[in-house]
Image 1 (spheres, rainbow over the protein chains, first blue to last red):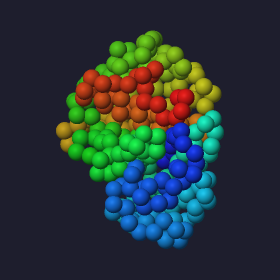
Image 2 (cartoon, one colour):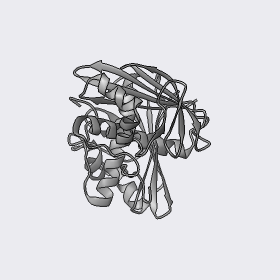
Image 3 (cartoon, each protein chain N blue to C red):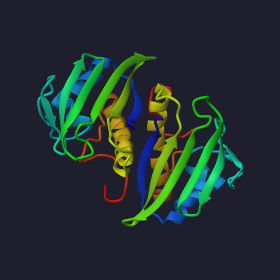
Length: 142
Length: 142
């Protein structure tokens, strides 16, 4: 099954990246404004257009979600953020896995994830996140 | 085999996007400054760090390259740009296919391709491309 893969390097310690992935306040600064729910393992985070259950969270190393609500193509997919400190930065090695088919919407989401991971980087490095609805647009009418 | 997938929508006609993908001048405005070679089908384009043979070029619809030189992970991979006019914009449906393994470098390239496709969009819509070496950086020291 096809996966969306990405990697960005962020010039802050893994602890700060991990916090941005595991707190409502952190998530609202780079992905979606107004996130609700609970970021504990087993609980669900509500991003408005989707719900993510937290499957696993290893401090400063890994965050793993499963999509439990939202668009059909997303439900059942898994999102993993692996954090690796190397060369003075935290690399975020990202995978959005278990898509059923490489539909056109998957192409769209892949590009969109890149912009959100750079939003995460820009928030942590320069306090300039671009969470939805202030996200980088990738097509006319996005 | 895993593929890199992306999609951007560009508010210009397919003719202009096709020209940006099939002329040395066009390619140098969004991907790599100083491109050389020949963009005819069967010929090779030299991007400095890689060579792409033009496999197929269907005016305003499709551009297909095969990597014939460069980093080991890239040689033999195929790059396809499919152009579709819809909702007042040209959608570029992108695939970088035939990677042997989903290595960490593939994650890096996926994010990088997103920034270059947005560079293509920004060049065509606003005359603001970011070709290498002026490309958007995605890690410290990129």
